[in-house]
Structures are given as structure tokens and as C-alpha cells.
Image (cartoon, rainbow, N blue to C red; front, top):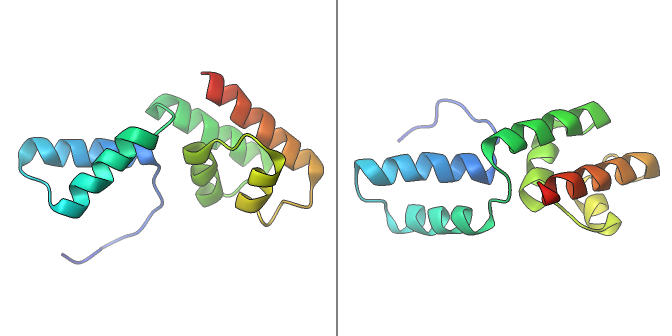
Amino acid sequence: MKATSEQPIGLHEVKKILSERAKKGELGYEQQNTLEYAKTFAKLSATNFKKFTKEAGEIGVDEQTAIILADVLPKKEEEVKLICEKIATDEKAVKAILALCKKYAKA
């Protein structure tokens, strides 16, 4: 199979895609493991994921980093800084991202 395009997706989308493929037929070993991982660690629904990434973009976070943040939902400033290397020096942005993560962790 040859890839025709590439775009970052969150764990909720991975779970959706692999669940649909599982209904059509048997998944390979790697796909089954990936599906189990996504089921275990996907923290946001599709709706909340889209809202989160949109709000993160408004803070100045690029799409790929916003997806990682949505999947991880860091709880500490140090974790946010590790994920957001480009804006880690801006304390206001780090605090805004942390507040956003806390907001969606409760949702």
C-alpha cells in the first residue's frame, strides 16, 4: 500500500478508523495493538478534540502540537514545555495551554 497523503490525526481518529476496519475484516497484529492502545489512551471525544485543537490554535499552537496536547492533556507546566518546544519560553502561553488542558480533562 502506497501513501498518497499525510496528515496528523489524534488517537480518537485512529480508534475510529481501526474500529471501522475491524468491522469489515480481521485486523493485523500491529493494527489490533494500535486499536487497543487508542481505546485505552484516547482521552477526548471527537467533538471535544476539535474544540481543543481550535482553542489551542488561537493560543498560537501549531496543528501537530495541538493534536499531541489533546492526546496527552498534560497536567504540569514542565510537560507542556516539553511538548511545546517553540513556545515554551512564553510563560503566558504555557499557562494558557495548561488551563486549556485542565478545562478539557474535566469534560
